[in-house]
Amino acid sequence: MNHSGTQNRVVLLALAAMLLFLLRPASVGAQTRIRLATLLSQGSSQYHALEEMGQQWKTTTGGALTLTIYPGGTMGGEEETIRRLRLGQLQAATLSAAGLSSIDPSVGAIEKIPMLYHSLDEMEYVCSKMQPDLEKRLEQKGFVALAWTDAGWIHIVSRQPYTTPEEFKAKKSKIFVTSSDLDEAAVLNSLGFQAVPLEWSDVLISLQTGLVDTVPVTPFYALASQFDLAAKNLLEVNYVPLVGATVMTKRVWDALTPDQQEKVLKAAADAGKKIRAQSRAESQEALEAMKKRGLQVRPVPQELEDDWRRFVEAVYPKMRGKIVPADAFDKALSLVAEYRASHKTGQP
Image (cartoon, rainbow, N blue to C red; front, side):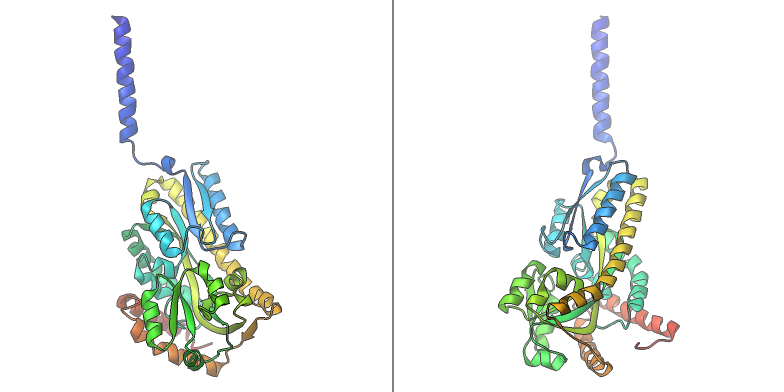
């Protein structure tokens, strides 16, 4: 009788333990390994900043979180990365604003409007004001923005020594756009250019073969990808800044404890600051390195900059409501005007 009673108690305890296991709140235990994809090249300073972020996650959570990084587009372009995030194959990614706009097009307002900003200070002001709303929109789509960053200005590299908008149009310049930016491609085509949608991983071979001849890109990415070996001209027009963010799927974020969330955010913010500082500093270093390999850097005097600004601003009506939602587009322009009014600055 005692033996039977003991057996019953063991069975009941086992059932109770199983019930508690099944009913326990979702925890990060099942997601100890966070898989993060990025276009950043392995070995770059930006990649090392993400590595340090992962080490902080592991150390500060007592090993509850570990980070595995898939660099250099090994998980595909940004659109493919987002698809993998939604499928649960990835849990995090460091994406450009252009990539993030595939999740919510409003994010494009802080990066996609050409020559909107006269300075990076203006860009930082606009981003700081718009990010809270953008983060809410991203969260509604299932993603949590851990930290924002930027990599300085995107310039225009080309196979031919174009300088003015008219020269680019006259030669029907074949301009690279990401494969997810079909609306942008349509606008460029309507202006007399030839937009060529591709993944970043295909740009170098496309430059070499002539499939594309013009690429808007940051200097450090052009150097790392060796674009300058095929496109030996860089126009120093400050076209748009390269803005981005590290995001995590909301499903995984919600499985973290509040303490873990705090530690994840702090480490991501540290990484974002490092990426910003290093990328901006490395832009000039990259220019000098490419000049030694034969790159012709073409300065943009004030008169030429004015020509470019008049040209791109004439394109704004085609962008508003098509590439960037009208409310976000108007907000970005309003914040730029607000910044200039408060700082009493015009064009530097």
